[in-house]
Image 1 (cartoon, rainbow, N blue to C red):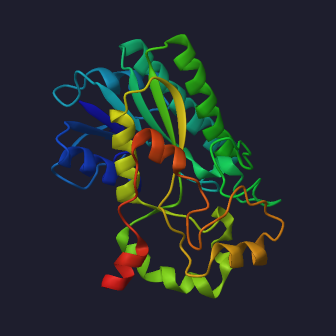
Image 2: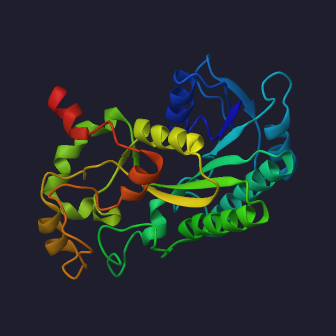
Length: 284
C-alpha cells in the first residue's frame, strides 16, 4: 500500500493516477475528496500528529500494511496564508509524516520540496545557472519551510540508516490545459522570470515520485524536478542577457533547456521527462 498525502491536489491527482496505472494499491489522504470515485480516500489533518500516525497505520479497510509514502500535502505556495501559518503547517506536517513513518517502520518516503529553495523569486538573481541541488537560498517563509523539511530528512535518515527520504524540488506544476497560454509568454520575459522560465508537467512530477519510491537507495536525497525544456521560445541566452545579465553560466546552456538542472534525477532515478508543452500546442 502506498499512501499519497495531498492526493486531491494538482500533483497529487497525477501521482495517484500514475501509481494506480503501474499496479500499486494507493490511498489518498487529504482534507478534501479527490473527485474520482475510483480513488480510495480518507480525510486527515496531518498537522495533528495523532491523525498523521493513524493515517499511515490503519484506517478501517482503506489503509493497512503501508510500504511507502508520497507526501505532497502542504500549503502549496507563498502568499496563500500568513507566513507563520505557512511555515508552521508545512514544517509540522512534514515532521509528523517523517516521524510517523519512522515509528511505524516505513522506510520509503518521497516528499515535495520546492524549486523555491533555489532562491525564488531571485531578488539578486540566481546563484548560477542552471541552478542545482547544491543551492540553498530560501527567500520566503514557504521556501524556508521546504528547506527545513530537507534538513529534517537528513537527521531522520541519520537516526535510521535504512530509511530513505527523497525530496523532489518540483518546478511550477502544469496540466495540459495550461499549455494553450504558453506561446504568449514570449511577449514579456519578465512574466515568467521569477522561476527561470521553468515548469513541470504534473504527469512527469508523478513519474519522478514513482521512480523515487522505486529507487534502491537509502538516506536523504534531494532532486531538482522540471521538464527538459523552458516555457519560452526565446533562447536562454537572450532571456538571461535581458533579465539577469550578471548570471553566471556554470556550463554551456542549450537554447531552451530547463534552467533547473535535472541531471542528478536523470542519473540516479532514471528520470526522463515525457511531456512538453511544445508537443501539446503543436498537436492542438
